[in-house]
Every structure is written in C-alpha cells, then in structure tokens.
Length: 140
Image: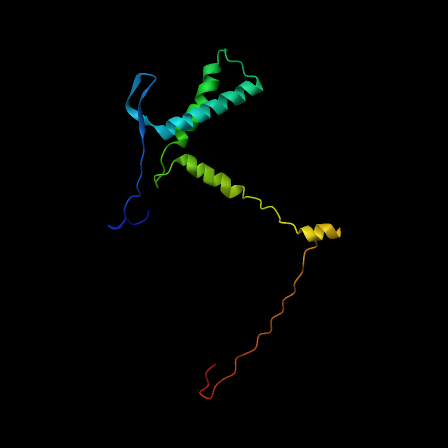
C-alpha cells in the first residue's frame, strides 16, 4: 500500500446518478455508467442466447437470461483499491495477453521488382582493449 503524503490530491471524479427511471424513483440513484454497462451487457447476452436458439419461455429462462448479466455487472462495476472499476482491470488483462499486431509496411518498389524482400542479417563484432594509462597510473 503506497504511503499517502499530505500533498496527494484526488483526481477530479465526476459521477452522475440516475434517480428516476420510467417514472419510478430509484432512491439514492444508480450511477449512469453502471446503468449503461448493465444495458449493454443485457442486450449482448440476450442476443447471444437468441442466436444460439435458447427459448424465451421455459422454466429456467429467467435464470439463464438474467443471472449472468447481473453477475457480470455486479462484479465488473465494483471498485478496486485504486478506485477503478474491476471491469477496466479485466480489459487491461485482455489487452496485456493479446498485444496488437502491427502490420508490416511494404515497399512498393520491391513489389514492382517481382521479388519478395528478404530479412537482412547484420554481424557485429566488438574488440575490447584496455584504455591507455596516463603518467599518474590512472586510466584516461
């Protein structure tokens, strides 16, 4: 845990809350960011289930359609020790394990020549030699 000095200040953190939804009071309100994440998670999950053919009206439909997005939102919108959402940590984990692949930039002149570029090998040799000594017996 880092030592907090008196000069440390919290970054500005604006969070807006939704206090009413479709004319119904939400009490102290829910963060709009959490509400947006929940909406996206539910829509994506329902579309996946409908595409794979899960029926809407079965005994276990409420369990299958509602519990996974709810668990995702509840666990993903918690705050970690640094104040960031756990969902951001998950995204960082994914990005760290799947680095971006940079496309190789080709040379159009080589393509016109009709041959593929070959990797260039460079051999580097180094000779180590002691430095000369001055009159006082120290290296210069």
